[in-house]
Length: 420
Image (cartoon, rainbow, N blue to C red; front, side, top):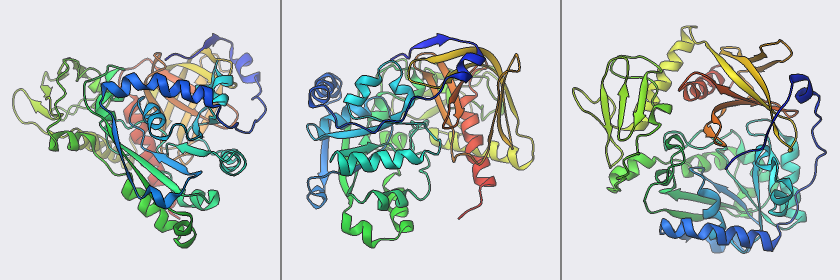
């Protein structure tokens, strides 16, 4: 999938006013049925199945549907499970670019990812209580990088109490293995399933305190796709399974060098020290020679996090990148305004254009994580920052920096944001 792009100057892009806010529509059955039909081939290819738990307690809806975010297959899974029940989907504004009319007919509710958006709550209330439609939301917002759950925003329980409808969860198994984000949209042959459960009834929401709602949500959104693959002996035999693995495993555990790993075929190789690791058919890393420091990919990923956290504690973390800048101010296009410089340090992000006409800062306490993605709309790896007025999509010229930026943003937030 691609996004409409348009060349513009910084002045032109920064002068664009955001379109007027519109309340979500009730989904049109014709278009939701079309999506349902178009989703079937991919679901048949994965032999998709799902089970239901305690759904009789949820009643007929509408519900707040919370789903883990593993791959592009997620929306097709949701269509298979809930069609023909009408439901709106909370999605990022970039999904509306060039096709806003269609997204609204599907009942989609636009929001800026990882940006405080009070109007989103009102839109969700409108969809649930005025339109009488369920609302599907991915509380993690971003795709999982390492196959494990990403951090949920705190006090999500407050939103649940505000919406005052039953909460249904959808947790998938195999969707990440089918299409992991790092692998460049290359599909693997594997089965996919999902568990659909009523997590909270209206009565339970009224009775339980916010902290308990958050705690139970955290319990549900705990998973490790690589661990489940190994445990259940699910084999991924494709010869491209390690392509792009360097996007998430950017630091060599043998020599400690960053940015020199390369994932290609079934191997991950460090170009600095020459050490090679095979990604086995069961999702484990195996050194071809010497010690395998981290057989389990999430352990390698978390080791990198600890390295970033240590840099921050020593006051040494600093990332300065040459980037190509795209500005999203409306739903007509992503406005490509040329080259710039993105600085990330303990104070947060600073984005400047080469001609000095753009200067944007974002503190490290702005969000608990970072809008980052691989091969975003088939353009490239991206770091996204911004506010309610506009979003800035920064495409680094350097390789394999997106994961470290996200890890650093999350660790800086933990350090700087006082616990409530």
